[in-house]
Each structure stands twice: as C-alpha cells, then as structure tokens.
Amino acid sequence: MGRAWTTLVASLPSRAEELRRLDEAVRAPLALSTRVGVVGVAGGSGCSTVGGLLASVLSSRRDQRILLVNASRTARSALWHAGLTTPAPSTPADETARRAARRSDAATVGLVQTLGGLYCLDLAAPVPEASGAGSGSDGADSGAEAGVRPADDSRWWEAVAPAGRFFDFVVTDWGVRDASTVGRVLSASTAVVVTTPADRTSLQRAVDLARTVEEAGVQVLLAVDDVRRERTAALGEMLRLLPVPAVALPYDRAHGAARPVGSHRLRASTTLAALRLAAAVVDVAGRRADTRGSAA
Image 1: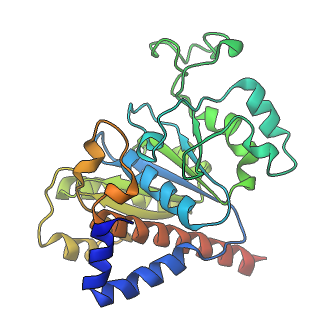
Image 2: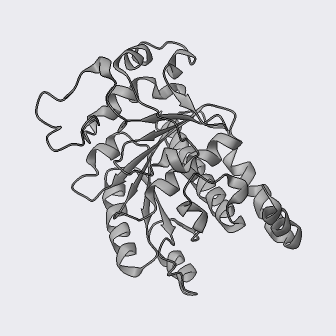
C-alpha cells in the first residue's frame, strides 16, 4: 500500500481495526452477480475517478472476475483511472462470442485486463473496421466524433449484459445523468453510485437523483468527491444528515496526473475512502441477495 499507508496504520490503532473490518466486508462472499452503475450529477463531479477506484478495490480484494465498463464520453474514463492505457474496444465478433458463452472463460473473449487483473471494456472506443462505419441506421450517430460509437445506452445490452452473470461485479461508468436520462442506467443496475462534488447545491441535486433511483427500486449510495477542494469541517455532519447513505472521498492531486497513478501513490485517505465505498457497495449487494431469498 505504500509508506504513507503503513505510517497511517502504525500511528492509529483504531484505524487499523477499521481497515481489518473494511477488508473483511469487501471480501464478503455474494451469491449473485452485482451490476453497479456509477453516474455523476455534472461534468467534473468525479464519476470516472470513483468508478475506477471502486472497480480497482473490488478486483484487488475479491477472488472472482470483476468487469469495468466505460459507457461515458469522458477522455479520462474510469478505465483510465483504473490504470488502463491501452484501447479496450468491443468488436461485433467478440460480442457474438460473449453472447453465446456457457462457461466463464468464454465470457472474457476480447476483454483486456489491467496489470491488476481487472477486466475492461470501452463502449466509447473507436469502431473496429470490421463493424463498418455508422453503426446506427437510425441516425443516432449524427454529430458523434468520427470513428467513435454514438453515446447509445443500448450498447451496454449488446456488449455487456449477455455475459454479465459470469462476473462477480460489473461496474459501469455511465457519465453525467439526471432524472430524465437515468432510466437505462436503472434497468442495467442492481445498485447505483451517484457521484457529486461536496458543495451544497451539488449535494441537493445528488439527493434528488438518488430519490429517483430509490423510487425505481434500485439501491443507491452517494460518493461525495471533494474535487473542488471545498471540504469544510461541517461536511462530515452534513453527510450524516443526508437521507441517502454517503461516503466522502478526499481531493487527491494524483488523479490529475498525466498518466494513471498506482494505488501506492494515492493518499492514504483516498485509499481508505475507496475501501469504505467498496464495503458499502458489497453490503448493498448482500442485502439485495437477502431480499430476493426472503421473497422466494
């Protein structure tokens, strides 16, 4: 974890106990595959950072396969923040193979991995030549960047959904959403993480969006990312008063580096916050499985 992390653990015995509990919570076994949608209330809200951190923690601490999907149009997507610097496109041939998968090894056809073993898929990657240009016959790609798939949510159902059950977690960076555009995210998710800056106006927008998610019967968490370095002493109390479970993530200048930064170079407080978020997501997934079992 790095010297800063070791120093933190050594200097704070109570923190060491929290780390032990969080590690145990993140590793808790789950009976069902979990689909986590990560959305932001506005550009620059930390959505891709949060998605990359969450998937990286899950991949490093759980034994099963974890898939991270970019369905946003952000240059620095969650894949980038998870450490992937190579393309991760989805070709029609690979999608056909994954749709026909009957075993877990067939579900990973065409997927690239980070050095840490996290599977990655970029739905906004350049269209492979074999698929032809202009994949949308309905004109949905009008105005889209040349050589890039249109921002069409249905791509997730074509490229990800058929083989999603073979992954312990599928974490998708959906980019900026509001109540009018979050519908497809909800249908593709068993839990949603709404990311927001730490200012009051953004927090209110995040709570409003979270209520829309809850009304659809989907579990929701807030990830409050201090991207604007506006954290105040009152923020902790503010989060405790929110009607939605929330995890705070501190500002970390490493996320603005020219290249992805490994976990050993992140602030200890960032790593701790990512663990807290991952533990909360696993807890939500476990409660969802318990609810299904009771209903049965």
